[in-house]
Length: 137
Image (tube, rainbow, N blue to C red; front, side):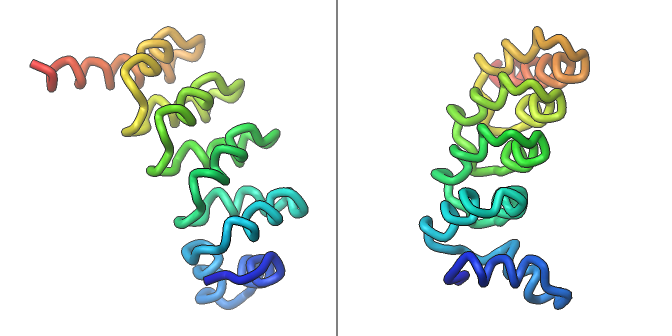
């Protein structure tokens, strides 16, 4: 377990691959995650990429100013349909595309993404809806 903000930062920027992997895979207390995103904005993407980061933290990072952080959040399997709905409105096309691909995206969100201005997003959403329709039969 990662016990502090300083430990996370040390692990993340270590040259030792085993320490780097710990930063990507070990849990931390909610307070550590919150302090990291509040006081170390440059670490937000690494927080989002951690395999154990709680949904409570992801719900904050959904609104991050960086599209790279929001994209990292959009790749998380544990995202709730509500968080995916928020990300479906993202100004960045790559984030919306990831939402269209996400297994937890609800039909209503996919239907809206099927009308997206960016053809790639609309196409993926329409394709997913087509597969859903066939599975429903």
